[in-house]
Length: 512
Image (cartoon, rainbow, N blue to C red; front, top):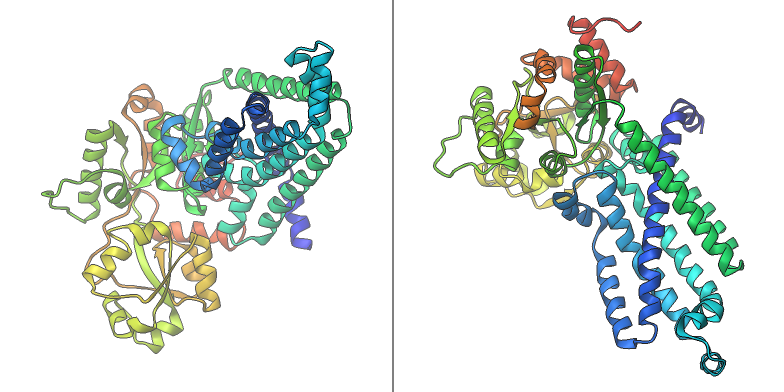
């Protein structure tokens, strides 16, 4: 409990910002969903077959996993608030449409006949008694939609939209339960508070409910306008990073170097943004300007390497080919990489390695029947990952589970699994007393991190390129391991660790 209170106090400003983001995106999605679903339900309340079709469509849409939906939207609408809003609106349509349709369909037919007898038009009947009578059922559907939206909005952090999900993801990645508890608890409290407020409106007049909705629309519109005005006041460069402490440290280095070289530039960071494909699609869509990518990942996941190409797996050869194909296929600019390699590795507990005399990956074959693997989804699907291991080393692993990066370390530490994929600079290797097995058949290519951007951005921002080139050939493997350890184990902030390195190397001055 003391740890949770300390974390809450330390990160209260970040929490307030995340709360505002979460509330804003949730209420915006709800209002847009109401504006879409309510008129549709009113129109189809007299056409049963049409209503059933709409219900079927919205039901199917709601079955699409939220993470898959976000991934499908990014190539079309980019990253940030837009894909998150679209996904949340889609999930909210069914309960709002369904409740409105049911509420209107169950009105006593005699009331309709009476209204017609008094000469009321369709609109007059709708406003005078149909909507007021159906309103309790409609509000019930809106409550359900809002609770669903607030819970699902935690995934918005994966596409750079912020919100309380950033606390949850960061807690999982850093193995810090207090961050996860704070994010999850605040999300649950938001759902309870807003659900109670909507329930309060359930017995209010139709005019009062409309007035409240219009007030929310004006409030949100005003906030968006102010945000857009503020964004126009300075040139902004957006840098994103993948999940984990290491990408966060690197992009903080990028930020400080760029701002040191160009004081008039405002660098905005999107930390713990998500998977490789999310970032690359966001870069192509112009939603971000720069992100650090590894040379081996480029060849395996981002470009099409011609079959006749003989791949030089050395650091220099991998970078040269990656740079060439990025330029050719997507007109991307790939700057000079840092020194260290964060290559893939297979890791086991030291006592497991000692008891089974494991030194090389080839040694796993003799105990393959006892292996229980926990790997990231990306590693499982890559040719230089599990597929390549099984093919090149002729090793069959009978039990394989897919896990998020941070969770696989927790699982091997508890003994639930005995083999994981790792990165050679992970601090957890030191933290959990693991050893990495030698890649004796050379399946893993070189993995050096370097800034990736569009050629258009590079040409327009030579001062940014100059700043980032200061990291070329710098940062050793030992330095990166130590920085990761300082963040993941010692609990230091990434921007402080990044700053200390830059000062030590003479790249920036001390903070005043």
